Image (cartoon, rainbow, N blue to C red):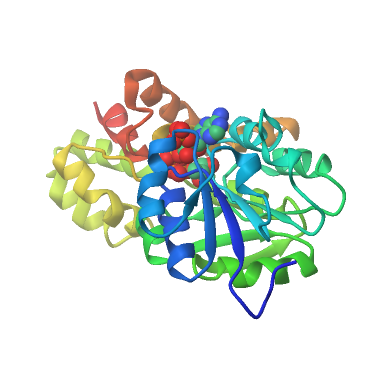
Length: 287
Ligand code: NA7
């Protein structure tokens, strides 16, 4: 059980662009954190901050109150839970598995359905990227039973603002809904400005005063410099738009805007932009 009067003992699995600042914040909040990452070198910044590095996910979760996974996709989550030396082999009654990756509700429920008796699962994917992860300003969409929500609240609060959106899987669903708006409207607006012969900086200025202002502000430097260092990888945005179009397909629905966004992202990924920031879709649209 999580000791509400003290800090928690945690395992953090997955030290990518998001996992590294999130695990760092949990350490800074005073939690006792054991980390594991597939590429072992990435544990160094965390052990420098006082984390313990484990050699397998199974070792990482021994004796912890809760294990947090922050990995690429459903396949990676499956691997760290049920793969060789995965967490499931050592998860014990009373422990809690918190998935903060964006994998969709089906994957969350599938993982949860096979956990050992007495092990609870919560889905808690996040909106925001490296900057918000570093400053503890993520939006966290939590799918959990009320009692499990009360258990995760004191842990996740140092990472951002929690939104308890329903039972298991609801957090994952809310995140897919949020990312369905991860659109390409910005890129299309820029290309339209180009077609009209407007100056790029004028177009950026006028778009800064519209409902897509947040995106314009966050990505303006990328557009102006023509460089797209990853804050949120384009390949992950494509994964999310695939989750959107899959659920729509299952319901016999065609979401035209999401389908178009997915197609643009796929073209950019095929052109080699998968590891760049998702805003690297813009040159695919504008050229
Ligand atoms: P990154 O920076 O691409 O990091 C992905 C992490 O997932 C990284 O630690 C990877 O380990 C790990 N990973 C990927 N595949 C596997 C497998 N098969 N087994 C174990 N670990 C794996 O992504 P972000 O941090 O930006 O995003 C994480 C999630 O949040 C994602 O769902 C986003 O959509 C939202 P590596 O370092 O490559 O060895």
